[in-house]
Length: 170
Image 1 (tube, rainbow, N blue to C red):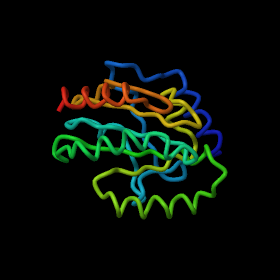
Image 2: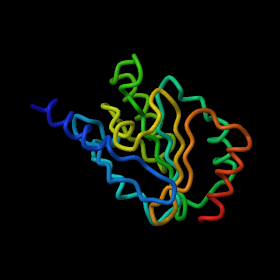
Image 3: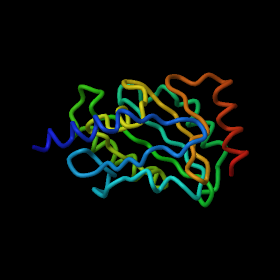
Image 4: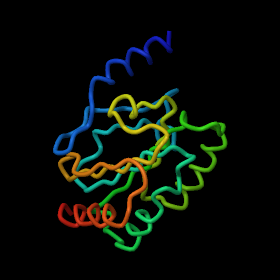
């Protein structure tokens, strides 16, 4: 029964995509589908009132956009105005979930201001048409509207473009 409900949910969401200038369809990841590292649900409704960067990452691609991560750290944005979310696509790797969950718990301790989320069923791949088995970067303004989206390795031009958009929207 759970599989049928999950399949119906994903199928109903797959008609949606996330477009620049729009607030994405509400996505909630919880319980057996994943959720935040502390066990609570994650809802995209919280993406507002700050500029947010969301990394949606296949664990096998975790280092793909380290240059962008380092550039964000160097900017040292105020946590009052800027937030970060890392959603890990657990279904995109052969690594066992319990191993990844332990790694994520230590990451959460190391970076307490980042919201870490587990996606066990490729929920956002289906619901928001994100790239699978990749590293997706999404930027949202304070209204929750998507202002930038990139899948794959960002080159220096893309990094500069993303940082400029963050600066303009803070």
